[in-house]
Amino acid sequence: MSDQESFISHLIELRERLMKAVGAVLVLFIALFIWPGSGYIYDLLAAPLMSALPEGAKMIATGVITPFMVPVKVTALAAFLIALPFVLYQAWAFVAPGLYEHERKLALPLVVASTALFLSGVGFCYFFVFQKVFAFIHGFAPKSITPAPDIEAYFSFVITMFLAFGVTFEIPIVVIVLVRMGVVTIQQLKDARPYVIVGAFVVAAVVTPPDVLSQFMLAVPMWLVVARTCGCVAPSARGTTWGDHMSNRFACFALALALFAPAAFAQPLLITEKKFFTLPQYTTQGGKQIKNVRVGYETYGKLNAAGTNVVFVAHFFSGTSHAAGRYKADEKTAGYWDAIIGPGKAIDTDKYFVVSADTLVNLNVKSPMVGTSGPATTNPDTGKPYGASFPVVSIADFVRVHKALLDSLGVKKLAAAAGASMGSLQAMQWAAEYPDFVERVIHVIGPGLDVHPYVIEFANVWASPIRLDPNWKGGDYYGGAEPTEGLAQALTLVSFTTVHFSWAEKVHGYKWAAEGKNPGDAMGNLFAIEDSLQKSGQARAAASDAGHFVWLVKANQLYNLEKEQARIKAKVLFLPAKTDLLFPPELSRRSADKLRAQGNQVEFYEIDGTSGHLDGLFSIGKVADRIGAFMQK
Image (cartoon, rainbow, N blue to C red; front, side, top):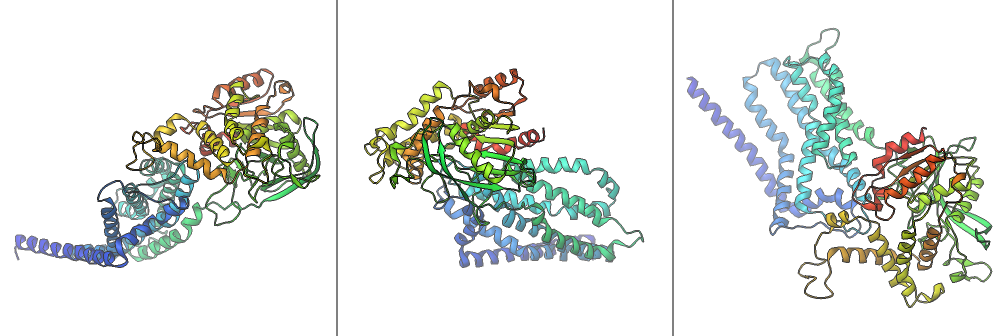
């Protein structure tokens, strides 16, 4: 046979192999398209994202033929993945006759292992990474936002991530081939490990979404695969040949990777439970008596014998004591500061005993998971809700009740008092009320040492819709119709005034609330931002109490430590949000200068983000290192 005839015969065989591979994919595609159907397969692919979205949320399709084409593409992808072993076998069958015996002995396990590792990477991404990343991303979404991801954008994202993790798990193949070809040596690879770490994170930053969690989940497996492979491919001291041990090495490596990789990156769940504390009687800062004061609280970590390893976390205006962790392992959403509270985190629960408690007049009084005393709770002297007779309470009253709670738990000293927004007021109040009891203050998105007069009126504007509601009745509406409309409008104002205008541009822009309903055509037609914030306010109103809202506003307005400033001895970390319009960074900077001037150790750092005041909740992970370092000082 001539060289030309031989070449043609190879081309014919290649064509036949390609036709078989394509035919297998096509047959599987048709079969999957018929049963279980392209829609079902897409729903299966979207399951990790849908499980992280709020109940009732759906994905959207913006193109005319997108609802048809995207599921078809997903079905084709599924057909290709299922047919992959057969496709690779066709490639192997074409190449194998041209290989020497020792080359075939090496190549076969490489082909088998590469298939297994690629599919392992895809599986690791789907079953583990997507669950964590989507829960992480959507766990920080403001309640005023209704997530509606586009199906085509999601498909593109999935393809990118599948390829990234599939290729990452293929690294052992690349390393072995490079070593076998003499391009690099094991020692050279070991010497290059520091550069590999940097390269892994650079690659992960490029191909993953702009969040630390998904970048970490790609970069660390990439690094570990390289490190582990270097150990696997090193020849034995007895000079054993590659062919004799390649299959065993790959089998062990693939098995270990499949079994231990998910566990290596999974953080232990922080499980907590709600507890309740009752103070038989309390005298407010204004001299009024409240009987049977009740507050709910949570703890994380263990109290040391001296009672000194304690961090108290105070919650924000509409928050509760649920600062971190979950009540049950299968809960989708963790506490609002879960990014910094937990084992190995900035506020390390392996080291610190963390306590968080509900305040007096907590807004969420209707929830069974909240313990509080306020206008909606029962006056033991009358057997009826306090209503307007409940006394005025201040931030100082919140702190004093919580001090009684800590005393009952055996706490002797606070390593830190921390909080965001209204929680930051309480944290600073702790340092002023009990200067020898508090070592550090972590003041996040706060006003500093007092509430600015401008914000006093801001808070009054928040409460105005409630006072104007006909059902308000001066606060004595309990037992009748509640001022729900006023409360919904008040909560809408809170949501709106705590975000930044760049958030409005990015999330809503000039979109209409409903397709085909131009706001210019009818007074009832709304823009998306109006509709979203109104619905959010209405939803939150059902779980909140108007009287508690008004009493909370008063407590915040009364915050002023000008006279107590000199009592503060604690180290203070100010963490304002760069785009905060409610408590701009300038307010924290002024207070930082005052404390620094009187000799306090003070640190100041701005949280970067576009969510305004809410970056103190949603972007707190960005300053985790700052908080962790501060806790060590």
